Image (cartoon, rainbow, N blue to C red):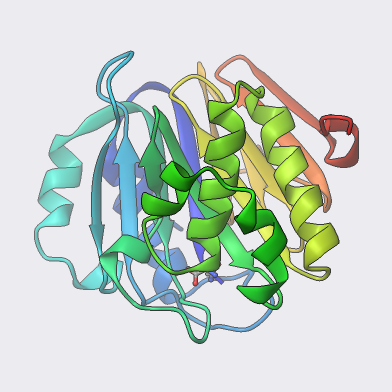
Length: 253
Ligand code: GLN
């Protein structure tokens, strides 16, 4: 069910995350090791987004085909460095379109967002939450998928001024109330902080020299990878990784 990754730290090539590491995303696409809830490969598209300068919207490259089949990206990725990245490979949930627009990362208002999982009973289960969305969020929803709706809900909260970690925790709990059993590994990066959740899928964190990487599966066999427990909210910057309970991080009321 999709694999995703976020990085913050010293400038590194996009290729480090997509191709070069022993279990880079291209390998997690073709031969993932920790898929739960159905799906055996992530061949329905991919995306990579990265921040180019403070205050500037991130840049993205997405395609609706397997990462391993893109012949031009290896060269581009080797020649492009970034200090802040979100990348993902997709295994489309049954009934959802296989299009570029449905591939993470979603972007807007200075954020990159990815969702690994599935909303049970979508779209009906989220009708009440969706009905409260500002019309601008409805009109700019990138694709008719559960992930895009989660992004719209989160974006509305962020736009209303909620702190990122609280916004993510609150969306997760509201969606779990409306659609129990949903799989909600969310990943958000604004170029300075990564916020991630674990609701039924795997997630790992590794501190690097001056940086941090959060990923569905470890990128190598190194002992420094730390598994994130289920039901957790990760807030990570290059110098600090905090792991708390999602419940504790919600906005009251
Ligand atoms: N449900 C989302 C989609 O179809 C995410 C899929 C996944 O995590 N495999 O895009």
